[in-house]
Image 1 (tube, rainbow, N blue to C red):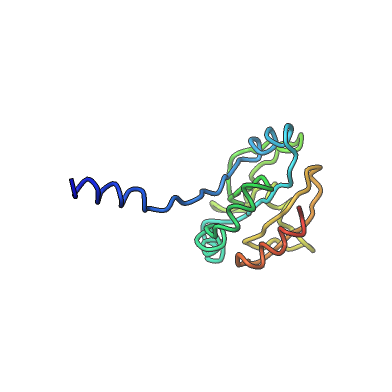
Image 2 (tube, rainbow, N blue to C red):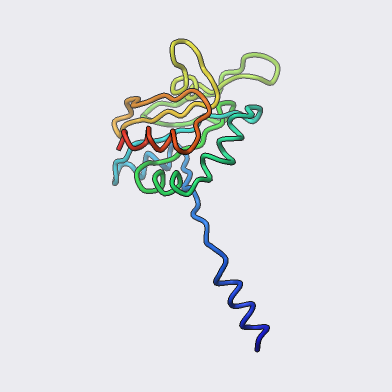
Length: 152
């Protein structure tokens, strides 16, 4: 009996962690048709160490998760993704730049600022697809929460 009580106690004591709802561009666009919200697009690459840091810290912060899930459509996008993406009535494609390298047109469209593309970049789009903000660098949870608070 004590054994079962201990097991039950441990199971109910384990906290449940909120998960960040991540969408594709197509999914977010369909959801936005019924419930318009801004889009938060995290553009990253596999080789970017600051991108990995954000994935493991900023986007695991419970306040960030709650804010993004409640007020935005969050899209995590690999800038070197080779699949076509249909978004805002446009097909965006991967553009090769050499031996096994290149960048996706959509990443360039959303991450380029003053002629430069940097990773990580967070692009925040209004429901009408206009760019509300482009944040080109590592952002900790506190700083990102401040920016997101101004967008809503």
